[in-house]
Image 1 (cartoon, helix red, strand yellow):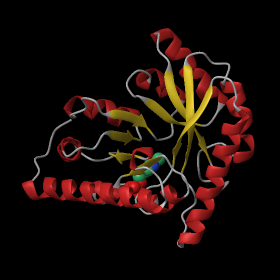
Image 2: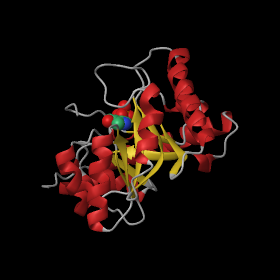
Image 3: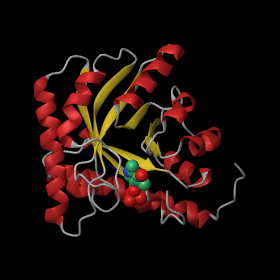
Image 4: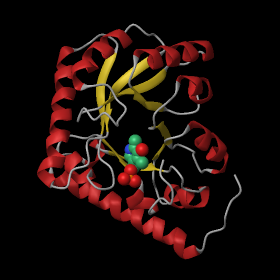
Length: 243
Ligand SMILES: *Cc1c(COP(=O)(O)O)cnc(C)c1O
């Protein structure tokens, strides 16, 4: 990828935004009576160029999330990724599975048996086990990816048979809500589903990661039990084209 050069003040802006969000994440943990280590802050780096991402990584960001396989592959060599967790968080088409398996530490957006089977098959060929999350469409929105809450458990039971994927938990993007009460409603519903599935103790399925909360709602998500927040805009600034 051709690198645009950035003014020192642009890099500094990302660093101070990252540090401010990290502090808000920690404060939200404290308010919720939770340990700060319980919640991972993932910097969502879609559309963001390498110098800005590296500014946040050099300042201590430990995990990044990308939406598109090709975009991630084209910029990864320019990133300071030593010891950094890399997550695919966007919708994944079956024909992109081969390109991404082995390139990221977790695929957070598995929402069908067909996709899970493809990840399992390619992982087996590559001799690895791929950690995944199941994406739940908690608001049952037609416009969104993700399996419905009602069907999540059945999908998990089917996925338990795959030996080259390792389910770690759940991910969601809830409906956009304008009040704190509405935001918390969906996060709380999601947390309940997470706890319910955890209590079923399905063989080969771990329920340790609950990935929910973005720039506008990560504090509410932490209050309702999120273990991983995915923050883009609030760290890297407004994106100039949608993903
Ligand atoms: C873009 C994106 C985010 C981050 O959204 P912001 O509002 O910019 O924080 C989080 N999760 C997913 C799946 C995304 O696509």
